[in-house]
Image (cartoon, rainbow over all chains, first blue to last red; front, side, top):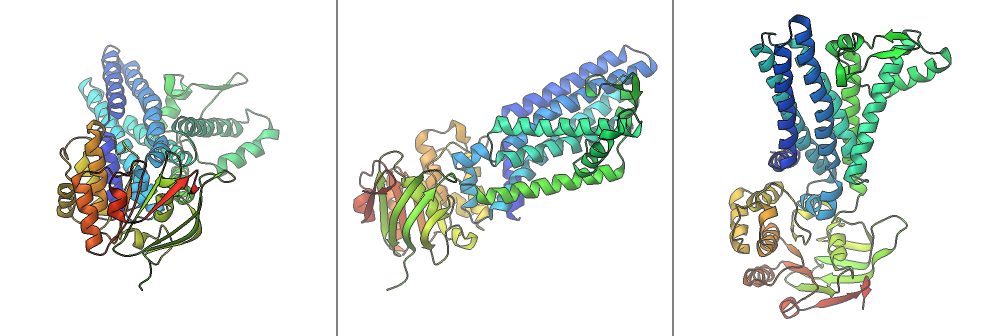
Length: 272
Length: 203
């Protein structure tokens, strides 16, 4: 097994045995179950919207907490405490060590989302809403968003402390989300042309917060709750469209570039 | 005479660009089968010298380790490193930490188990955050003993009988041993040569 896979496996193993990921996983799962109970008490479309909005809130809030915490611990403290140094001293090149550490954290993030997505599907089935494919697709869209948060936090963790790294990563995600909303406003001619060039340029260059078809529809109808407030500009409700496959690929490519940047950044860091 | 295992001239370690030097002016000539102990108070730069030799903290000066610059991945595979910093690897068992070092170094789990025995780790199946401090030090020693390395680098090794035995065995088979300790005890006699550091410089 190559060194990146060995380090990824050991990191995922160690993290999954710690208490905080389990607490966040179970808290998210509990909220999904409660959402299903509430949804079961409502008829038709209202019940479906309830199940979806509660679950979407978990993917956003608990997902951000998991992703930012995982990424923010990729270097800093472990580099100062000698753990990263021990991995490097085995002869594994520093970029490989960092990629392994990120891969292990990604595995944990994917595992957490897989459990939430499966649980939401099972709950939907039990309350008679079917497997709810759109909700599962939304889960995958949010997973990609959270991968972005994780790799940004990991990059920051090479130079910053864990709290600062997590905050920067969440701030970047919120900025990408705002940019997607502003781009929707530009497309709807809801903001002045003076800003449209800047917004379009930034939107095209930076990673894009991914919006699923389900969230786009619920946000427009003001039914998304915590997961996405209705976008209203100058009294007009603006539709934030679902992301294209191009946007998905663009953001995935950015995630790869940022992870590579984090791997390269570790080359210059002093280790204990 | 063969080339030294470590040849260092005027080692310098600076942790932050523009910051103060943590170590300056340290020279090392360590040959195969020989030992060297670095002593000094807490914060005198002992661990920094070891990190510089391993390439973990960027060294200034002219240094070669086993004929290569510090941090060369192929050379690091010939070095056994017992770090002082701990705890780390939260959530993992001591055995899993040693297994990881063995696997990354191209050795099997049998070699990791042998190193654990040689270091005398008493509770290898306990998680690192729950280990007694003695077992923490033994686990660190076990990491260094994997694969019979050509150079042992020991940061603050505790003087267990297993430690002295491992150092004697290593030197007898021609490996060099570089150690750092604040309370050296019997290590100076065992290793033969020493450098005392004061505020990052030979004192």
